[in-house]
Image 1 (tube, rainbow, N blue to C red):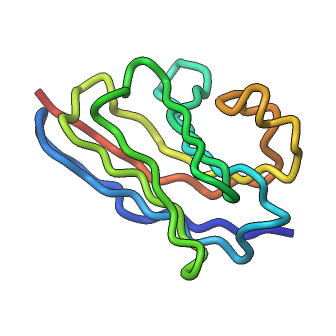
Image 2: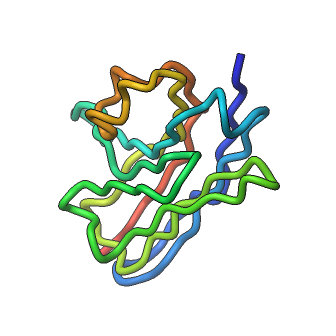
Length: 127
């Protein structure tokens, strides 16, 4: 069982920045991949960014490339998402997720490969 707790959401004007954090009860060998996903009202959940917990591989959705940065602190069992240049279309509930499935590396932004989820944190960006 992997427990994930997100924090850092809030309201921001367009162009601003926020950093999301995700504290994990375990991190590393068993949780092969970690990711951030988001779900806007009336839309399907989508992958934003993901990272290999062993190594340095990262993946980003095209909509956030160059604006968002995923990172991790293995010593603190914590995952981060630095969000810069926020846009109103970034408004969503953001979820942290962990995958124990090595196949997640084939589709790292596919939520179906992730088996542990946090409760979500709301990010609202106004124009």
